Image 1: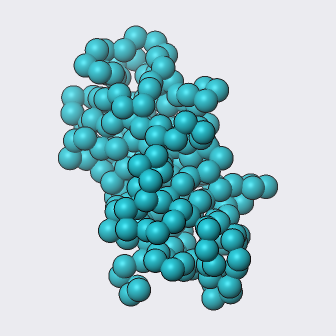
Image 2 (image 1 turned 90 degrees about the horizontal axis):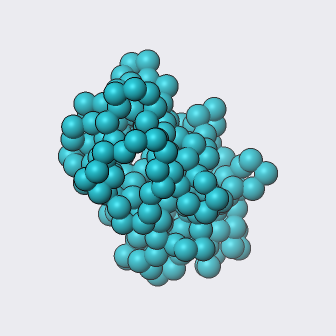
Image 3 (image 1 turned 90 degrees about the vertical axis):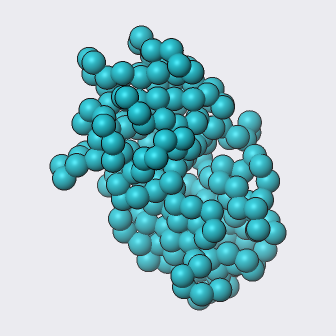
Length: 210
């Protein structure tokens, strides 16, 4: 596998998020917090999910609530629509629903695995985050990458799953087969550090700061 075909993972410890690029699949901004704020990207943006689009600087908040999620406005005048209806107050969101922020930023909310609280926001409109990513993962305890349709990130050409998971405040990975982390063979799992490289039978991941 060439360097250009590797997936790249960028970690931002202070911001509790990382950027994950998956070969032949796309790029994902992965947020680790129980609550994330979505807003407009800018030089001084401090939101968890900065969008290049017509939004308020802080537009909406999405929060894990038990095994599900709720969304609410981050301030007066921030328009949020769910399934075409304008929201008032805090509202639960469910797998498959369409979410619209402002006049044109649209997502599909997905919570594909019933055994996990991790969810995903897929862009339906022609918008991206900054740094650029194709979608957003709201990561709870783990994030499953693999060929099954209920994976958090579907990687159709992979032969088996790779799981990113958190333990003791650090990021780890595990797979069904042997993997290499920074050139060291690991049977099953390994700790991910800044600038680590992870290689499996049919995938590669590399870490770098955002």
